Amino acid sequence: MKPIIIVKRSLWSIKYYIIFCTIFFWLILPILLLIYNIIKSKTEKIELYINKIVIKNGWLTKKEKTIELGLITDIKLLQNEICKKKNYGHLIFGTINLIDYKLKYIIDPQTVILALKSRLL
Image (tube, rainbow, N blue to C red):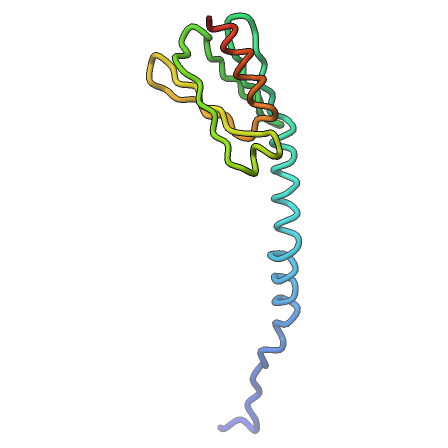
């Protein structure tokens, strides 16, 4: 027996799905990533002690990394022209055991380098 008529669905039936995906991926996802990066940068602390540097970060899971000042062999500063104008940069600590520690987006890195070099000498 043959059907009287065959009905097919139009692609317009998924328009709400397309609209939702567009809004999510172009508006909501970048906002969520921005909030995540703000929280991540605000929870990172770098503490300078007499004999060590302690890097603490994490919001839900706390992580702590310790660098002994006696192990540091050199300190490098990476700054381009925009970083110099905005007064931030990246610090790289070279150590005796050949592990480089890179600290990104440090505010006023020149002061940090002067304080560290006074401790190293």
